[in-house]
Length: 137
Image (tube, rainbow, N blue to C red):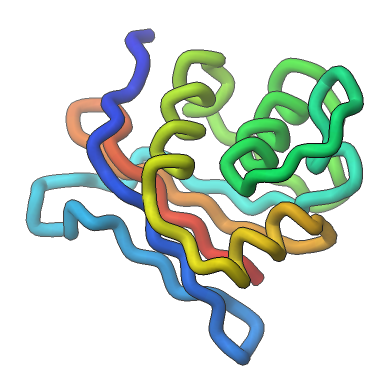
């Protein structure tokens, strides 16, 4: 499987209620389709690298969550699987999309702190991912 294209920004904003609103900068008129989605709990194992170093960026934590799930079989109760990020190249591309995108400080802080639920949707065309949408609960 080829690495996914890194074309879209990620926007995550928290709301006073229980969820955050996210939107891809490409918009849905670009022919993107929902390729995959999952829900994950960001727990204590997700906020540390495989070497045990505390992660300081939301994009690092979200990638570590998927590496824990797919590569290391470290899963929090309630974590859902996905087929898309089983591929390490896709996880790397997702990290770049989150890192190079836009995220509110409060949403990023919540992900880095951990003890939070996220919902991730992967959008693309012809089976190739182009953007991710993250909702923080």
